[in-house]
Amino acid sequence: MPSPANQKNPENRSSIGSPTILAKLIQSFYAYCSGMANSVVDFACFIGPRAVAHNPLQSSEPGFCASHPIMEVLQESAVSNFTVPGPIGRIPVRLYHPLASGEKKLKNTSGPLLPLVLYFHGGGFVSGGLDDADLQAQYISQHSHAVVLSVDYALAPAKPFPAAPEDAYAACCWAVKNAADLHIDTSRIAVAGDDAGGNLAASLTMITRDRCAAPFAAQVLISPMLDPSMTLLGDAKRLNSDITAEKCAAGYRQYLPQTMQRLHPYAAPLEASRLAGLPPAFIATAECDVLHTEAEKYASSLIRAGVHTQVARFAGLTHGALRTHIPLLKEIVEFLRRRFNVTGTGPTNLAFQPS
Image (cartoon, rainbow, N blue to C red; front, side, top):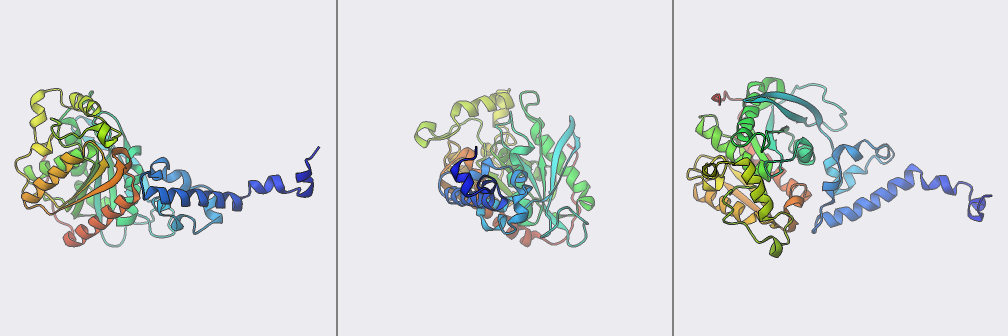
């Protein structure tokens, strides 16, 4: 027997699930999330870029994605997964190519050559993967109009140092060798990473310099792990940090099983004595992160070495929340655009030396 409410409005039950009403509900939710994202909590980290971008409501609400700051990241790039040769096996990578407005897939590679950003995910050297960097890579690719190569480097303890930085270097060499197929400008290559990936990005700038390769256009380090000695680590309880000294120590022990490795500049960029000649840097730290002091000290060291360096500390954010924080991603895009405009002089022949 239908209820009185349904007798008065027979379409009441079906209207609740209509695309228009669902779209309005989702819009209200994202409006709330957008406001929260600019304070302490960043809801973007809960949303997979492809999860919402392909939902059927997008067709009924064409301006939906563009109207919300958090939804900007859902403007997708053309994505492909494959492997590239590495020193101890194949390296899984994910390639992001920016799409022109309205494109659903990459149609051709005509037009000007694009910059390349090599991105390295976090995970404390022992965990993480390509999916952990998906949101950042999508955003950087689409908004800086650059190709992004996300690298799934070797993890400890199965493959300790120097396997990860050598994988990073091998992926870079592969990209340079295949620049024509990737449609990239080899004079505009940047490196970026968060957490352990920030360590790899920093070490890769030193490796390429030491092996006589052409310098990168820029480096972007997000909450990087730079000091295996952990002498500058903050107090997790006082900072309300989501990572602790114990967690950092556990990762370093597996990544650097030999004590002397903890002083090697490729493993401990903060210990590096030669910083001159490294590419311009953007270093982002979170206020509620035990790692922010060492990252800011590294920025000071770069500045003293004559490296153009930009530092940004984000108030109220934790280590894990920073990498997907939309205001941060916007600053990264602006920084990369400036650097790519400065260094964009056309393709050059890079002399990467084999590892």
